[in-house]
Amino acid sequence: MADHLTEEEQLEQFKNWWKANGASLAIAVLVGLIAYFGFQWWQNHQQQQAEQASALYSELVEAIEANPVSGAPVSDENKQTAYYITEQLQTRYAGSQYAVNASLFAAKMAVDDKNIEAAEKALQWAVDNSNDALKGIASLRLARLYVSQDKYDDALALIDTKSEALKSLNAELRGDILLAKNDVNGARDAYQEAIDNVGETASFRRQLLPIKLANLAPAGES
Image (cartoon, rainbow, N blue to C red; front, side):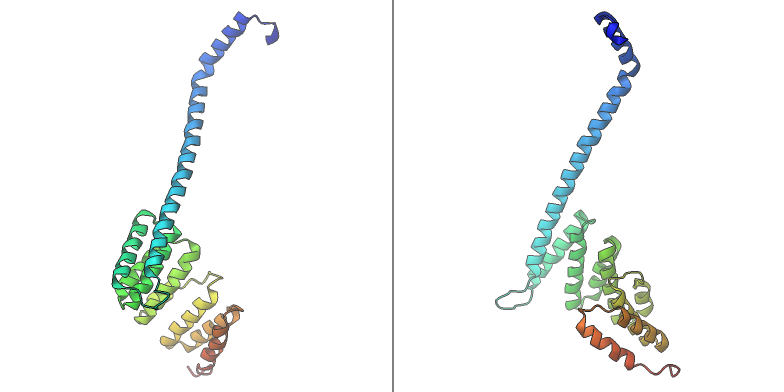
């Protein structure tokens, strides 16, 4: 029917339609443009953040690598550089895996320097800020640090019973803790679980775990 309207009638019809719908259409277009350019900005920002975090992390790795020729240990100056970079990654790129990995490196350096407080702080940060994959590793290392201080209950609370990838390692550590707490039966169950879930490539642990289990007192004598 619109084909039979004159140009003037069609123009008038468009004006009426625009009065009724123009404002909402303009808003919809504006919202769409904002969303599109906002998403583009977010993607670019995320890419820039990742690149900057990666560059910092590369500097960290370079700083803590031992001299491949002389085998000299990491110098105190390079350690300070590594700690500084770790702090920058934690502050500016807390949501990245680079920051978590840097914290794990910082914890190892602190343990090597016998600075248990700094190691605990770095590992706790990694636990609090990592995704599921790295959180399990950070939790396991923090639990081991607690064991070294005889904080057995704190260590037990950190052990993740749901992580399939770390199930054997977690079970072994739980066995070590329970044995230290004189719970021989609990340790036996934990070591058996560790044996049942040990990976095919973990040849050393495949030999060690049965020894740990065999060295326990027979059932009923604990």
